[in-house]
Image (cartoon, rainbow, N blue to C red):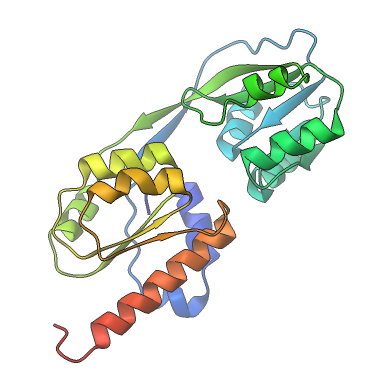
Length: 237
């Protein structure tokens, strides 16, 4: 698992029991989330946009105004915002969906997108260009990390490794730091996340049907089924 530990634990916990019983989970977060010590510049903002639970958590630490409505990407981010005290609405399973829905909804603006230093999608720019004024402010940093000792050791073994990658940046970093010879089975949350992984030697690369946790879990299940068939095939070591 390459996500920060709390997110990885949630993902693993949601896998069926029979899946968890067949794998040994190795944690090797490739990103460390560090809230920035900044003053949030609200101006005349009439609502917030959260595109990740990391943004919600950082905003909560900064005591961002809970009276503003929050428009969120995905169920996990929406639930995190609701738990933190915002009137949060899921307005898309993806950034693309959020843009389309907000342009249809046309809420009071300007909006403020609270995001990480590294962010894809250009949400604020695209919404503003379409007539819904949106500003943005980074409130957390995504610090890249090396593989953990346990992951590095497993990479040199001969046991199959299933690695789910949840963002293009994490996928690029994984491709840079992976140096193992273990059979590698990859799950990517999107085409953009899959692209840098194509430089690696792998047994199979599965792209999630949609960029959501549920679809990533299904991708991991399919990879495990493939691994089990290969491992049990006649002549397999």
